[in-house]
Image 1 (spheres, one colour):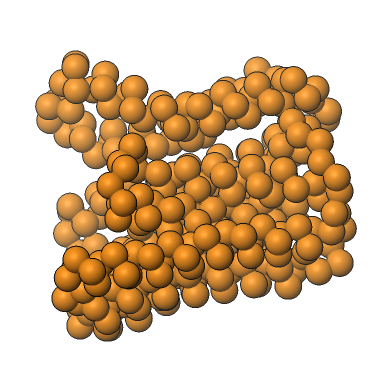
Image 2 (image 1 turned 120 degrees about the horizontal axis):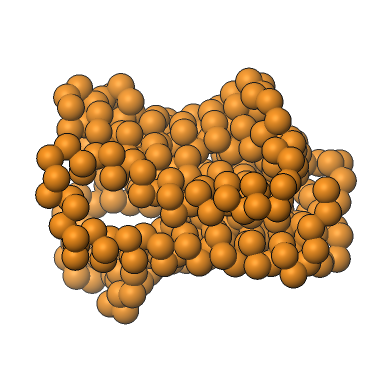
Length: 294
């Protein structure tokens, strides 16, 4: 099914705007109305809010446009695609386990689903999982919409993805070095080995997922670059914590945005290769439930 360029762009921009600003507006409304003081409402709100700001608008737009679910690869559950998404998150989970061992805490503490041994921990895992599921499905939606919203010169999927990954990796790497230098200058490296390991192991875990997808992308046909850039931008924005122009906080945000954007790139490649959002859903659920990635 074809969507006009204008309609696709408006749908994409509306979804992105709600994602970026919706949470801020809803939180302001909650503070004014003091809804959060209602007994038992905090956790349901924590789970519902990230889903509302990520996948509710795409869902409503799909219904409004009368688009088939098959357009987004949701016509039927694909266990194989879902399993691939979960598998791509495993190196990130292993990075968390390695960090736990370095910090001399129980390894299960790095796997939220296994380490949540009381109610508060389980609630935190549910909220976190809802967040990452929302990020992943929004990115998958954005990747599909970008095909109609933006016209770009077709290039090999492998070549385009490798170039984008290189740029994001360099940006995240430079930010990590600057962050270490800044922390050392301020005497903030008391737990230096763990901090340095975190700045190394998280990128290695994410890079593993990127490398796996690049291997699958060889000879997989062509794609317009916006189809890969759009999900990378959307997930990258999830790391943006607000306007903070303090130098160290800004560098930390750039570092995290680079890593998040790499995960968005993985979702873009999944969308192109699998033509299904179930792989993205598996990746998002696994990151939320099995990792302590920020």
